[in-house]
Length: 359
Image: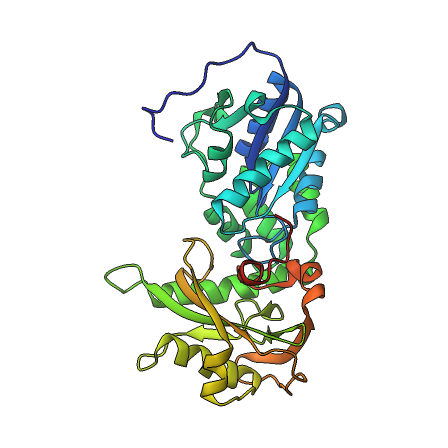
C-alpha cells in the first residue's frame, strides 16, 4: 500500500484480537518482533501462515505445522499460548484467498474481521492478502534495531549455500533469535537438508545460465489435465527442481508448436499415452492461463493448462518416460489428500478445473 493511502483510525492500545502474517521460511528476528508487537497490543493473536500445504522446496522448506512449532518455540510459553495459527493456501484466485482469510480470522477470533487489529511490518509493501481486511485498523511494527526487513530468499540462499545443516544454520545465526535457531536445528535433519540443497543448486545454476540475458526471461509452458473414468493422469518428476513430486504432464513450449501441439507432445513423451488428434480435440474442455509471478521457482513462468475429458472408457495404459519417473492414474477423490506432494502450483491448476477444495 502506498504512503498516500490512509489507514483506518488506530484503536485504543489494548485489543481483544490482532492478526499478523508471513511466510516464516524460516522465522527471522524481524518476523518474531512483528508477532511480539501484536502480542503487546492484543490479548490474543492470529498468525497467518502463508503458502500452506505447498510441497517442500528451497522456497518452502518448512510445512505450516513446522512453522507454527518454530514460532511457539521462539516465545515464552505464556505468550505462545495466546497465539492461534491460520494456515492459508495460495490458490491463484484473489477472491477465494481473500474469503479464506476473512473466514479464518472470524472463525479463530469470533470477531468481525474488520474489527481485528492488523499488525504490519514498517517499511515494507503491504501483502496482497491484506486487501481482504482493508477496513480493519492498522498498527505498523518497527523493524529490529532500525535495520531493513531482510530479503527472505537471500536468507534461504545463505542457509543452503553450505555443505551441512550445521554450517547452514551458522550462516543464519545473525538473523535468527537463539531459540529459533535451536528449534530449527532440531527440525531439519541432514537428509532433508541435502535434498533441499540439491534442488537449490539446480535452481541457482538455471538462474545463472540466464543471467547474461539483456532482460529477465519469461518462460512459456504447457500442462495437461487429463481425466478418464474418474481418474486423473499424473507424473512423478524425475529431475530437479521437484524431483519425486507429483506433477501434470507438461513442459516448455517448442518453437514450432502451437500450444495444443506442445501439450499433446508432452503427454505422449512423458506418459506414452497416444490418441488420434481428433479424439484429443473432441476431449478438450477448456484452456486456462496461470500467470502468478511467483508460481514457479524457475523464474517468471506462464503456463497454458489444457483440460481433456476422455469419458468413462477403460483407463489407457501409461508409463513414465522423458522427464517422468513414472506415469500414473490417480482417482480424483484422492487428489485433495495429496496436495502437499505437488510440484509448484499444479494442485492449483487441478483445483481450477476439478473443484477439489470447498468454496
